[in-house]
Image (tube, rainbow, N blue to C red):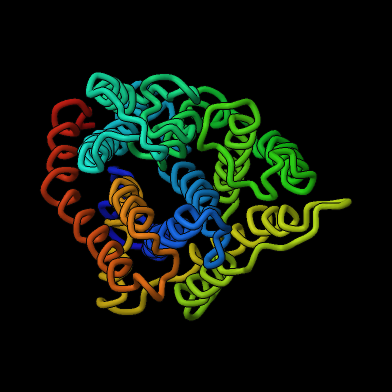
Length: 383
């Protein structure tokens, strides 16, 4: 552990360097997952590379629970009030939510203000969608301000759905989960794990996977809640009981493991159990906690590796929040030009990847960090 990175929580405790780095690795894998999602979307087929990249969201949730438990659990009733906690979380998350919404509105207008089926959308509906995204009001499928027409909870910036559940997790943590004893939290985690496993292996979503939560219907809200609550609560439980072990090369072990888990092809077979769901339940319930434990146990061994992990951690949240508006433009370009493979478009895909990182870094340094510094100085107590 060393000084806290910009991606982490703006507090005084030291932070886990390797966990910052792993968060960044997962965020970069999300970009590539969405690149390959674009080929599937444009061609009307299935995602064939980094098939399980959406599980990075579940990994983010377990990291979030671990770090929030570590940063705040022992401060309640001492230096931390509920009001102060919520102010800290809003200062940490909200500025980039606004930036992502604005970029989403801009890219939608660049696309011509049309839905994927070509239906024109009025500027008033775009502005209403922007306002709702900024204030985190999700869109029901089919309403006028669900401007892209494919059911996204936040149509100007799709990945905000996971931040919506992150907000819910933070509220439940402050009001309820933090008060649980270790024993009660263990029971809570086990029950949630059973529920998530059942949701996955019995294919409750009917998707053949647990890539749910992005739209506001019953099964997606249930699945999204389970995807957030189980890993988030498990991360908290792990932070309370964490004892590091000696691991050499922890960052590289965890990085390779994450990429390998995301890259496993879709597993066929729906009867009597959804085999793909079995695999995804294994990732979330077994593999990710092991990776988290190894990552939290490891340390960076030199200045250069510390800088790399800090950089990855710094850009992880901005990359996740701002990359999808660029993806919308990429998807529209693929559809217009009838391009469906990486081989045809690798140069553009690489540009999108690099541009996402550069734009995220610029947003971090020129907007997010200065805004958070001002808000922290203005609204947080100095004790």
